[in-house]
Image (cartoon, rainbow, N blue to C red):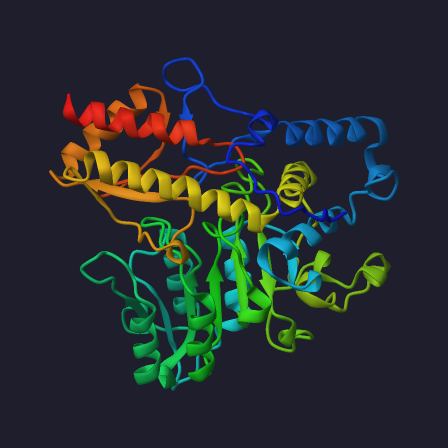
Length: 416
């Protein structure tokens, strides 16, 4: 049930007691700024998995159809929460598979190269799995990624600018078969104007897919109104659904029904006749028609539990709390050690999420040494080659006090 929120703000860290915060290298609870890589364990998620294990023990195969939450439609327990977080209609979102599998499923349907249009456009420095998937899809059509994969380079500020993609599509759109772009760039933490990118893709008559791995549960999204063709994501980062948890996918309603190619499986068959075991595949309506296998219950249960937290908090309120935390982190670092570090993440509120990426001005070795010393003092963050330190205070469980403690610690370690 969706909760109607009052106008009261969500104080950063308000739900901290609902999580098991990990022990740091010091053996005690440290500062956990790594929810952009793996969110900590919600206590309710552990309870949800235990409940399903108990039902498995008590009911075995009858659990597929019996009980308050039978397993056959179990994935639909996540539908409303995912629709709310992505700005989608319920029929446009589904919890299924894992991110890169979902990307391959979508590319099979939406990347349809012709002799005139064969190119895929993505950002240079994309998360490697996305690039691997794109390259392999290009090869599967008998094409050469050397000629058909176009990577838009960042500028000297190490950021990607929407106008560079717009310009490329305006000049070469008639050669492009698909654009794949991130909602938030994994290394820099830069958030993108997806509505603007979608308009550029539509002008070029090119399908647009979006990787939301670092965006969902982090920034507010409006996939339906923005006109995104498809999107894929994982749930183990800001959604706190656990390592290897079920992924998610979106397909815009204008593609329902879909008459193009897709990789079919039993679970994508329309539910009403699925168990008639007919040989013909009749796709389920909406994005559920892209399902292949049955829902993984033990990795979906934590997602359902985590979505309840987001529903209670409200994404708009979480976003305001997130901007406060990350803004506080950026200003604190700039004021104390601005002469020693470069903040890579753009600081305009609409251009970043929770993550702040920075590097040491004295070079990679100085940055690596700083990162290792932070780890030794109880900070759990993230290092990304070649020289990026990533810290992502998440408003569900991180506090203002942690941000201030981190800034003081960085200053002390750099000045030591």
